[in-house]
Length: 187
Image (cartoon, rainbow, N blue to C red; front, side, top):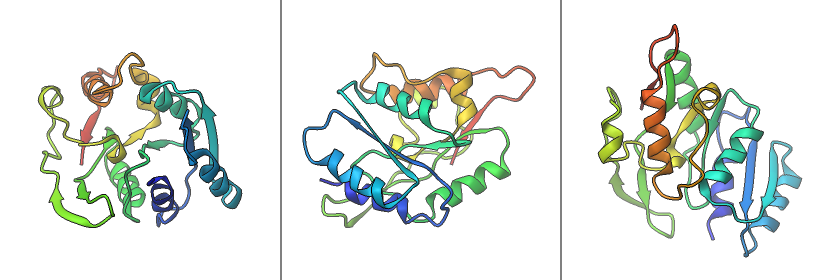
């Protein structure tokens, strides 16, 4: 129902040097047709289709196929503001030990209207225990990740279909990089 709006929110980014991988994980509606229509009109879009393998396997496939220095995730029912990518790229450039950048999230109604409700999680000075009792990032659609982090700690646990993002974030913040300060996760 919302996938077209999600795609449009990526195409409306002020930072335009990106590739958009749309991975259809066995949908039975018109998602694949719509995604292929977008791919015909924009060379930055690549569409992949697979039998249903679950959220973790699907994200891992995207990570394996992506070519960029940074990776972002967007679920089909979420939207990005036009300056999202630009703001996060700037944050990474200013913070070389930053593994994951995220921000506050504003919740919208099913018809796309702002609700005025904004996430309240802490954005800085996060510790491993912060990922044990809440999700400071709120949703995977909020994360921008350095590609090298996946190379160092691996992908999402494919036997998990719930809280797989928290498990991955916990591994990222606990990872000991040889000869470097620990990775940081912050907004």
